[in-house]
Image (tube, rainbow, N blue to C red; front, top):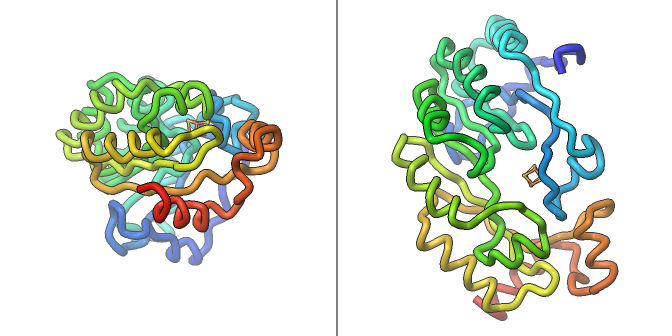
Amino acid sequence: MNQAPRPIRNSDIYNYFDVGYFHGDGPTLQMWSSRGCPFKCSFCTWPQSMTLNKVRYYSADYIRHDIEKTLQKYPDFKAIYFDDDTFNMGDQHVLSVCEVLKDFKLPWSAMCRIDTLKESTWEAMAKSGCIGVKVGVESGSQRILDDVIHKNLNLNDVYHFVPIIRSLGIKVHGTFMYGNPTETPEEMKLTRDLIQKVGFDHIQESGAAPLAGTKLWNLNEKTHLLNETDGKRYFETLEQSYL
Ligand code: SF4
């Protein structure tokens, strides 16, 4: 990714915040350390429509230079947020970025998966200033994860890693979906059970909303189980009906 032009940043970047999850209301420097994701979640749009499951990384030196240059011009940032498709794609990349971030002494957070790192790498993230990660769990039903949305996520890893990560002082924001094709009310309740049993710092719940160009969209074209593309309205209906 180093060969791509550096992002154009003007004073508008001070208008970007973290909506209160990790970094309070101070401006948060939005960055990428990579582009793309090798996973094939059926609902997720960018890896299917744009990056085609390829992952390209910015080097640690590039990231250091980019942060330095940006902070020289805009010194009021209180935190950094990595909005990669999946920031923590491999220990080597994450450890190299941690080496950079520890020198800036700013709290940082990132979009992550729960199952892609060794415990020692999560420790290195915490030591370098990571205070929060957003992770997609999506469902408490292993059938929905495996057969419907192809998340390639073992729920045992959720139970195992979330408490470890939180014990390191990293907050975990979990995201969940309800109403995937063929999902039963009992499976939706499994999601609520998992949320309670695992314990997250905050959660985000949505109605499944198939996006054109994704496998979830194609599945829904066949099953017509998701007529409602407005996920918020669907979720509200679901709350009243089932939960
Ligand atoms: S792991 Fe995240 S970014 Fe990657 S395909 Fe799945 S939802 Fe999308």
